[in-house]
Image 1: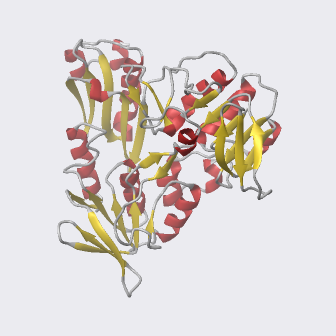
Image 2: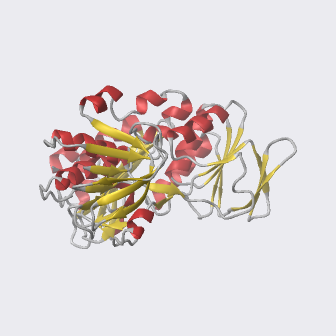
Amino acid sequence: MVIVGAGHVGGRAAQALREFGWRGPIVLIGAEPHLPYERPPLSKGLLTGEQDAASTALRPAVDWDADQITHVVAWVESIDTAAHEIVLTGGPQRAERRIAYEALLLATGGHLRRLDIPGADLPGVLGLRTLDDAAQIASRLQPGARLVIVGGGFIGLEVAASARQRGCEVTVIEGAPRLLGRAVPEAIGARVLALHRAHGVEIRLGTLPTAFERQTDGRTRVTLTDGTALAADTVLVGIGIVPAVELAVQAGLAVSRGIVVDAQLATSAPGVFAAGDVAEFPSPLSGAPIRQETWQNAESQARVAAANMLGQGVTFDTLPWFWSDQFDHQLQVCGEPALGVTTVTRPLGDAALVDFHLDAAGRLVGVSGFGPVSAVAKELKLARMLVERRRQPSPEALADASVKLKSLL
């Protein structure tokens, strides 16, 4: 069994293969020198200093050894789907070599999306995708340091919150007219904006950088489309990722917005599967092709992919779910709110709320919630269960905070 990509998906899939009874060789291949780790702490605990790199590990190193999982640091140059072989370069051998596979999992994740503007490759202009990236950024988050973040999405906002906790001066630049426009309802985006401004984060909407320029004092000048400019000790570009589909394209696999897979995460080539950020799969709710860049998706698809590498024929039916911690608040989204035609809001007090999204038939297809963790955690857990169980509660019950969500299960 060969897994290309030694991140969260790759690591969990390797672990699951042993759990499901595979006793043959497992080769886990990645470009990073680190054993598999979880990514959510990169923008939070690792930056605030509340966590260290060791705490992000998917499991202790001794467990990989105990399971006899071979971790190879190398680049996969190509896949020969007819011969069931992959071609590697790099690693300790520094030479090309071939590895045969019985089943292959592509868990290649994605590459950071880059800005195509002057100065985008300057030393102080950084991205956040890996443990090493997080370490570099954390070393720069000193009290009083000026951080400019390009992108008002989840990564940018989480880093902004972490940097403010470290005493940095933070400005977030977002080209859209509001924050999180594609991810959450407008009312929640407005509350996220208010939260950050209340904590001293400067948010500039409707503008984008046009150039970065190194100044004589070592800072970076950030010129914006609105004609203004900012001085930054560090610039973080957090504008998302591009799925790493190069290997799949080379191998002739079906590729659209990611590597196209069916409900069992099988690609268009026999014996080849894909999972995680790179996979485009049929939505369990609508059947439409979707791609998910979340912890939950990585965790659940890894196990389904491993089962199907062993021929178990398991269907992936886990609904999308993600969360974002910012300051003492949490945002959660479950299901697919975009499928809803009606939104019902349940106010929870203390600036907290839950939005329920219903389709034309009155079916609950998504939930979005935001507020202090203490106010929303339990309610959002129950709301998520309502979506997962495909319940059709009345809009009146959903809107009435005196009606316990547990009673609607």
